[in-house]
Length: 240
Image (cartoon, rainbow, N blue to C red):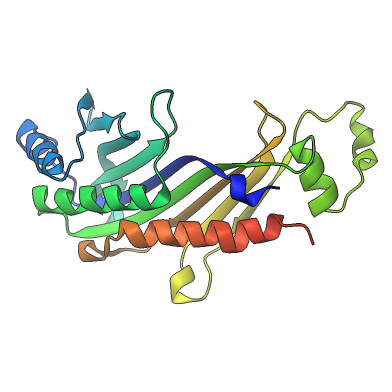
């Protein structure tokens, strides 16, 4: 695996907030106007039932989606909530943003959203994810993962009676004991089937612990995500 040739494919953040947000035109116009003042121009808009998607393609792809719905609250009563979903992904005309660029934009968007929707009181949960590609130091990335990292012979898979097109590993971890580790983590490491010389790595972190809206901190979450990727996942993938 060639660490220095990492290619980020996608970064995403999500926040579940309460109470639910009103998606009227006045609020959305105020949101886009305020973001434009900060040079974040979300010039594409799509509306759905109980949702809105705002996006741009340059200088990097960036999306904000707000979705409203109901959860079962205390005593089983429905609780109206909203999800704020932020994503940057590679596209044909624009490169993916760096993690720092994405964190800055996400922080600005959530700060403006808190001003536009001052009724937001609580974050009920969050998630953060990254998808990356690493070129393999072998002709096939599964060979690297299976033989070099896991120390398994390829003929151990002969029972399947077919050549291996691709494969991988999925790991799920419960929340840690340290205060900074109070999140579940899921990691996928597998052959990138569009180009088997590359290893596709997906990391998703999530927490359902409620917190006040003032604790919403996209920059810290992106840093946590990057540290988990580098210090845990990449460290695991390195051969001895």
